[in-house]
Length: 433
Image (tube, rainbow, N blue to C red):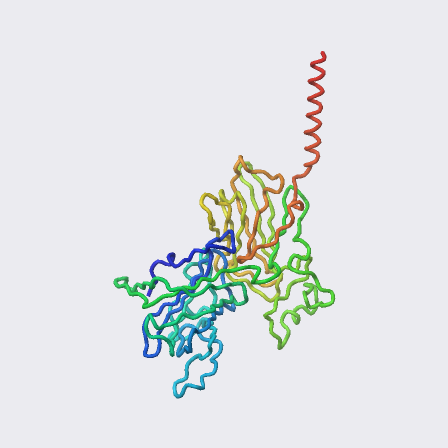
């Protein structure tokens, strides 16, 4: 079955965490599709309406608290992480008896008789702008010890969404218009018996207290390379050598993958900024009517591959992009009449995977912009981005006074002042004569 009109599910927010994606959220829809003798069967779907923030492996974890003493008899397309205490049941045992169950997605390759549509991707959820077809994830619940009519059923409370860590805050469940479904032959429309919606929004501050990426800058007209600010994502802890690793260490392999130990914790290369990700913006060339930029994304995390990565860049010349090489590109226009933001991501099977730190741990592209004579300049750092996001997280920029400036800026100023003085003296001489 297909769901009709995805866009009307988007619940507008009075407050948004992200100025570049003001209406971005993950909407959870709970559709009751049939009643059972002691409860109901429901399809729970998550729609990632965020333009560029996605959920990557190991995937989403959805939780809630039952309003009464409900149990889950069966799950299709997902599973609860714990069964809980089901000792009060004789004979048939429920799938989960916990008051506060948590559900995860099933892995790819799950048998077909355990699947439903939009399930079984290991909890990976693409962003809406990058891959809308895979920005939906669903599972089916058979709920018992619950209400069996629209008036007696109770809405769950305290929804939580982890991706897989913190960052999302979910509002209360609210009853909405019943979802309509279209059959595969598109000749019949059915609808849910009851639908409620939950909206979850993201905060980078809740997700992690420290930044996760930084930006460095350079240009063809200045030999200065502006590195990421020192200690952007943390400082090297000399009392704990294991806080980072030297790429020239002879024991690098054993440190990255220690035998018998979990390797979920990040391990970054020792740098002055200590960030897992660095984005470098290099103003490469200029032509008569165009100018060219090279972007390089480097992964300094030895224990993390970034699948379906994306980059969001804000710069006033994105209203006139001529060509993007080796990356996919899509303009983002969150505000009418303002086209200064672009989204970039890798080409499938070519560079859509940013591998862990090492010789291959980087991806790069070049952008060609057409000059607008009324605004274009290399002066005062205009050629550098205003803001950069990697995978939805705001990257720390260098301070503006550190940007590469045009050479001989001071000499141009002296020349200008000298010309003014000489011109004034010439006028005085002419007047006197």
